[in-house]
Image (cartoon, rainbow, N blue to C red; front, side):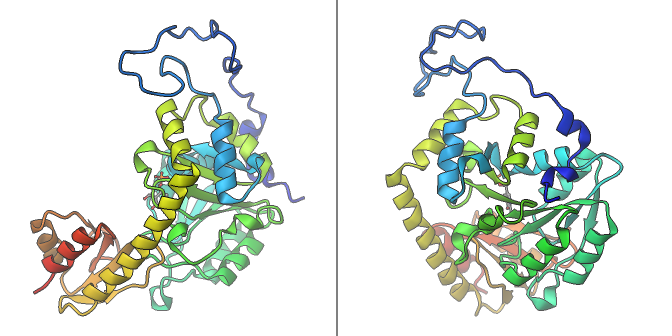
Length: 353
Ligand SMILES: Cc1ncc(COP(=O)(O)O)c(C=O)c1O
């Protein structure tokens, strides 16, 4: 079989895509009811009086090259948040299908599922094994039938750990011809690990999510990429609205992908990784700190003797970090994003007793 669309909603497979205005650069555009003149303050390359490219294929090809896949295997989205939403809408029927998530993890998987009316099956990570995947429980749920999407986040937010490659391979094998495995690699640039996108050709039920929001410093432009089998990309092109990515964001992403920018990005990733380890070394010996979890991302999960008190101290230094008083098992933890050296020093100082 090996057709990843067998899991998709039949009505989405049958859907006819919206017929957008023709995209023919070089022709005068009298077919889309746009204004003929630019606005006074319009500094864009293409002109904001024009709709952007309906599906930004040139940008998608650049993103595909960045992530080492063919252009047909990449879909540019408004952040990986939109990729998550598209997957849930295309693959989960309300009231019938389910997604599987492994908390503590990124919250949007469950939120997108609930908006769609899909069930959320939670198989918690095993804290005692460094927040590892609970393979037998995941495999049992996949075998039971109605799980259409399994979300695995590696490095995981908020725990920071990479999932073991062998565990991922087992889940991919268990899901063959049953469900899509969605591997969220939002933080992979900060880890010493290769993307699992290289497996898509052999395992077309793997979907990988990447983003320019973290390592590439472009969170404000909202550019994510879904990497998948070409049939999945084509299906989701029918669901994503035309003109989804705004022209200033396309241009910002293309500038960030230029060679000179990528060199700077690489240097900055190395700087964040070095700062992460410097911050770990500064925090670990503090009397109020009980544990700093290993991290392959641009943040640290830190457990305190009293997280509320630590949060209050940090806030007095006018720093925001993420608390989890509402999340089971994470009540003593704060997630601290690695900032500039000055911010990291200020954070460590604020926690000195
Ligand atoms: C694991 C993970 N995936 C996806 C996202 C969303 O990224 P984007 O900005 O591309 O929507 C985040 C944002 O924090 C995240 O932590």
